[in-house]
Length: 76
Image (cartoon, rainbow, N blue to C red):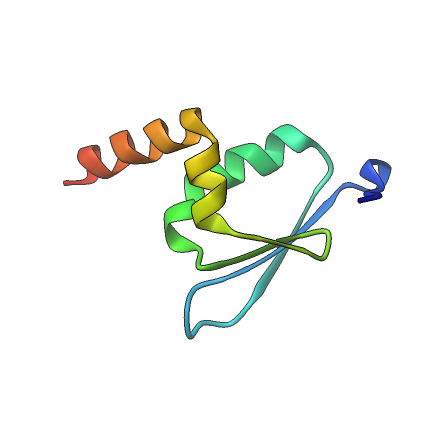
């Protein structure tokens, strides 16, 4: 996969039945922070026209998985 990182990251995301939204980030860290904050509210995610499986992303990333579990506990 050839992704041009100099142009930044274009995210397209949506909630089921919702309107897709676009965001553009210049830095990788901004994308990670956005995902940590909004991943529970996203059902569809595409980064630079590559569709990301949200469940696989969380399952394969131990830090993200633990953070989201703790966040859910604090919301209860």
